[in-house]
Length: 93
Image 1: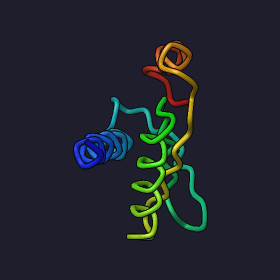
Image 2: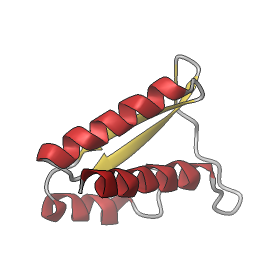
Image 3: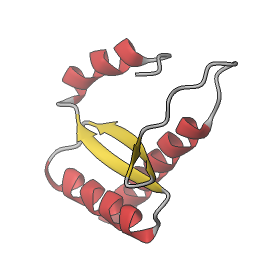
Image 4: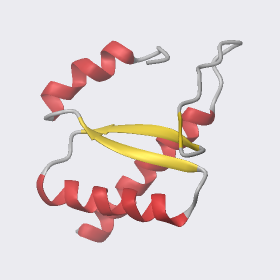
C-alpha cells in the first residue's frame, strides 16, 4: 500500500516540477529561488500516514540534488483545497 502511494506521490511531484518548466505563450512567470535553487511549491491535501510518506519523498528528493527545492504545502482537506486550486488555475500565482 505504501509503496503504491509512494509511486503515485512521486508521479504527482514530477508532474508539478515538469509543469513548472512548461511555457504558456509568451508570458514568463518570475522564478522564485532560495539558496540558488528554484523553489517549487507543491500543494496537497494529504493527512496522516500519507502526509508522512509524502514529506519523506519530498525530503529525500530535496537532499538528492541542489537545483530544485520542493516545498510541500498542506492546503487542508480535499474539499477545502479544491476552491484554492480552481482559484489559481491558469495564473502565475
